[in-house]
Image (cartoon, rainbow, N blue to C red):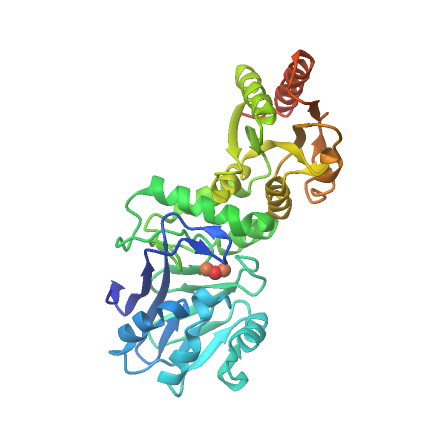
Length: 392
Ligand code: FEO
């Protein structure tokens, strides 16, 4: 795809990766993604904002073939999907310098072997004149690494936000045309990489808040020409209050845990609680992460394997712990045949979750009347706790 004009002297460049299905060998990308770079040509200087994943370097380099001069490469983020083509752009333009935060400078040298004398560290709030266009650098740590910053193009009122506000969507649309689709993709993205840094993101939102923003141009997914759409969504996701939602990731090997899950989901639904149920044998882990953005309670369902929880439950619990969602309550249900340490082991996996642990329900063999009664009691307790916290 060729470069696309956004406004006078401002262009989208980059690559649409329709077929990528996994990021960091971990995160599912059901809708592909894009690596957006942007070109800002002032009356005196030209800046390239970010580059693309090295796998698609040739796409960017062919777009740059008609650009005679690059003076600056702004590296908002050192992760390779945006910075990985910087070395090749530096080879093309002898005089170009890379601009990054002081932390970013070190990371670009460490990760990409960028020569130190070609990287300049900028300061928070620093402005750079390109002639008739002015770039303002705003440090916004942890979106998604500690070194990240965004750039505000003052004359055009465009915020170049890199991962911040991004969505993994492959599309030919330059701007958001289907807000519902992008909302889901952006929420998935937030859930998978930014949720642990909610409090810092609150500060970042406040920090960029004073500016009039006409466009938000992220480095993944389409550009927001209605910035309030994504800013309001972020405000909701980072808010402290969860919703009246239970997330229930589980595994069932021979059906006992599955029957318990089915009963608990029914009992919670009858009590007006929304439940998202995930069979970890088949689920898209991104969907689970997304559900955790709003949930008040997690109930983990597991059979017993070699005395402990099923390995896939270990994995999902570890993930929930590192994502640090705003959960308030947790519990465990499951089954065993002769002995189980599943409850103790799962409890030990969630030190980051500041939750009240509600009485677990573990049954020996198939669940019987007493087990179902205990599940009803658990459902009643969850509904009661949610009501006490006025969760809707
Ligand atoms: Fe899109 Fe954190 O890289």
